[in-house]
Length: 373
Image 1 (cartoon, rainbow, N blue to C red):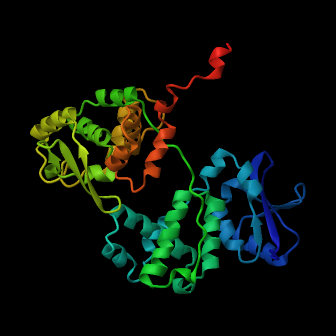
Image 2: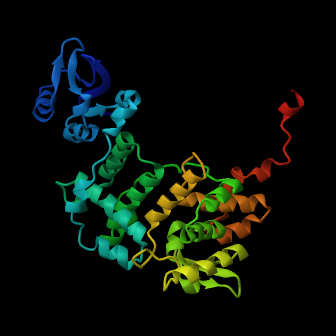
Image 3: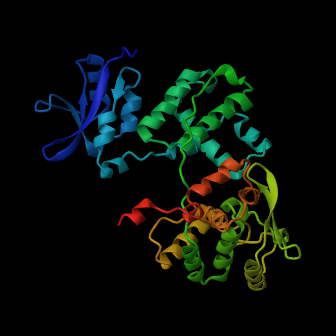
């Protein structure tokens, strides 16, 4: 049971301006800390201290007072207006000044983690080090780590995916770098959210490709969709991976460090040959303007622009093409096991989520309402 004094934060209005109300039973230590660190004002009408919303940062407030009080910000989170939430965006500028413990980056590289995973782990572990900046990370225990993760959930509303990634970044340090046993600390993981994938219809995919006149862009997007690729797999394709004799494309070093082959469609082969004659790529199948691998970020930009030209109003992103490919295959009656192998899924359970967004399951379903009206 919590025995620390409680501070309750609420959103309110004072003199026709938005404020954060800071309520707590009289406590001299909290009062002194507030007046020292924040531009607080005592309000007789509200009967509490207040901070103008424009001057309020929930993260800084929490960090400054968490050691002497329990902070209840549930009402603040519920009633905060959208424009105020923007002000609570996290600032990561401190990351560039934080040094990783010796061996952390080296071990990630040695374990051959992907470039994307290394970037994520490094960023999230720097956040962890910043939070415990006055502590030796080796001495931080499981309960403190749990409290840190819980704070991220409650204040910043991180997703379950981000929560898992942050936990893994921390676990990597203790288990791989320090070589401590797993039972040294236990971090409760979230239940994985069962989120259905976003998909495009065949007509929408066709409209995107037809409005993309740039040959490289059209070929690139067609390859992602036709082969059901992840963005990282696309940029790692080499010219030699295309096997026109066997009508296959080799996907090397995909997620899980696994290789696989996917079918090369006749239409895509025609596009690739036309693209090759015009752009003459060297090593990588899709190169950037200055050589080297094509930028993953640019793929998202060109797809977004293509979707806008096709007058598609919903948010469109590269992985949606992969989702759409899998769903369209399922709707055409392709066995789910083939789709699993094609996409490179470890378990068929991952592939089965496409059954929930496929029209195939509903074609023979007669809705009872149709007989009533």
